[in-house]
Amino acid sequence: ALLTTTMQNMKSTLEALEDLGVRNQVKVMVGGAPVTDVFAKEIGADGYAPDASRAVTLAKSLL
Image: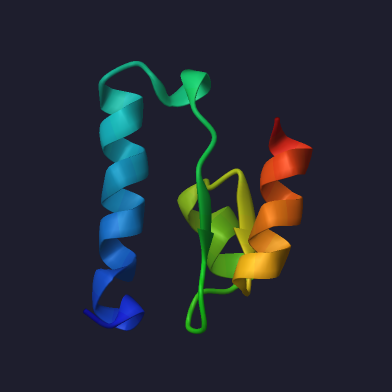
């Protein structure tokens, strides 16, 4: 599936984690071509990376 069609599910996933009371127990990273840092902040993600190599750096910084 294209990320543009699944971006809404990213927000839904964060909302589900919040509803379950586990949001503060996990870190959520989003990224890919159509995703932006602004979008990541709007949905409450912990981080954004535009590509896989930067995702590795981000993941290390979130640990």
